[in-house]
Amino acid sequence: MNFNSINNNLLGDIFYLIEGLLLISYFYLAFKEKDFFYPAIILAIAYIGYGLYTTLFDPGPMAYNSNFRTGESLVVQAMSAYALIRYSKMENINLVKDTGFWIAAGLFIYFSVNVAIFFTATFLIDESTYVMRKTWIIHSVVNILVNLIFTFGLTCIPSKQPR
Image (cartoon, rainbow, N blue to C red; front, top):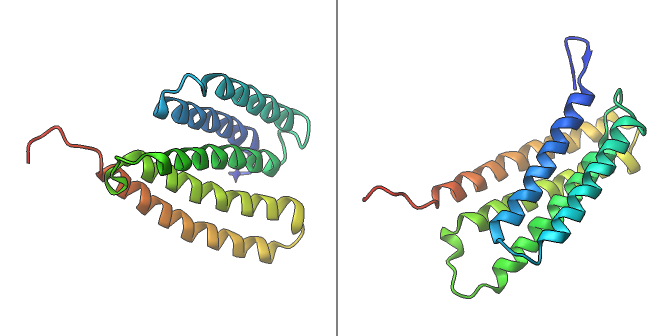
């Protein structure tokens, strides 16, 4: 988060706030459930509140905010798990050809690894740069895998052109 000797942590936190809100909106719009509207609003308000608190006060705009990244990852992980549970209850769906399933699976895998990395960096191994580097190697490999899952999911979008 440091580029040309400029601290970009505040910019990163703003990006993560927007990212989290877009993902909450995605899961709400993907299932179009009225029952999920109020929990999505409450989740978004809590997410914004926690994000602003950690960005402005603890640890502040000058420090990397791994607590907020862990929180964001937990929120998205929970919502993608909810989506995968919803897909498991659908009997007449071909999961191999369903874009939403692949996107939910990719988000679940990606943010599960994020939880492990940011939880490890924040709570378990705060001072060991060696272990943190190794966890980022794992993150990079999982990121490649998830991008392949997203790519496969996007190829499942039906084409409007006749074949």
